[in-house]
Image 1: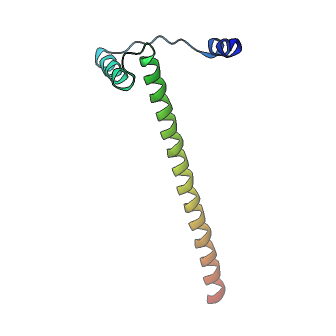
Image 2 (image 1 turned 60 degrees about the vertical axis):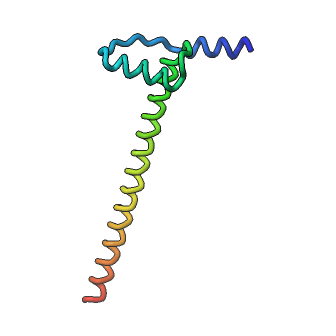
Length: 90
């Protein structure tokens, strides 16, 4: 148990940020809706948001790569068809 607590202390960061009042109110109300009045509600809300953004970004990259591979496959098919047509036309 001691090592687990030590691990948390070593790898937890502290960040101080400034934001406008409207953003602060949105953050606080979202934290209250998601986690109630827990002491770590703000931290959990921010971590949840960062994780969600990271997952959405990873999904967007994955979708782009799948689309890119389809385009490359279509280009290869197109080149193959063109080569085939060139062979049978000559």
